[in-house]
Length: 171
Image 1: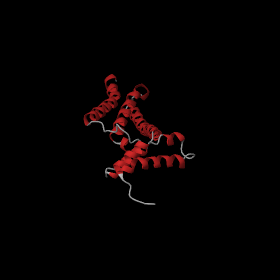
Image 2: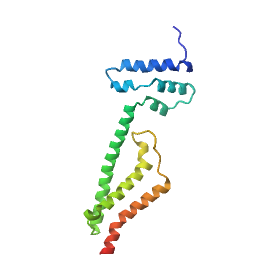
Image 3: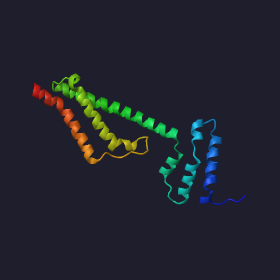
Image 4: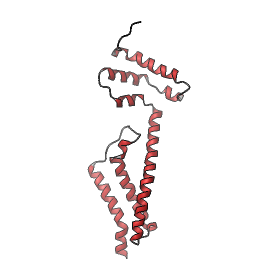
């Protein structure tokens, strides 16, 4: 038996062995659709890039992710967003309601305007900061353009100020 360093020309064989060994070794451990979605071409592409010195950890993560894993990451990210919004939205909503009550404004009449403002502010915070620390690592993760962020923030401030202004104008 001769042991040598793998060459680029070995990529197809290495990919075949890798995928088939996973399918055999983890047959009753991992879901069968996960194992069947393992791709020879993705493993081969990973090996080519590795041998050419353009390999990085993001490529490794992408190559090993199956459709099931991508769905799970998206689901986890959605759950994370819902929980964050529930906590942040509830805290800000409670604060806003108390401020409006102190000003003599009835939140049940104009509270939805404040909720929309909080939602828009949370959206800006998520798109510009929080999305880069979550589970989802796929396409479309870009910050909002600066102008768009400014427009959303100003719009939220205006929405937050509408109830007090209406109170002053209408007495």
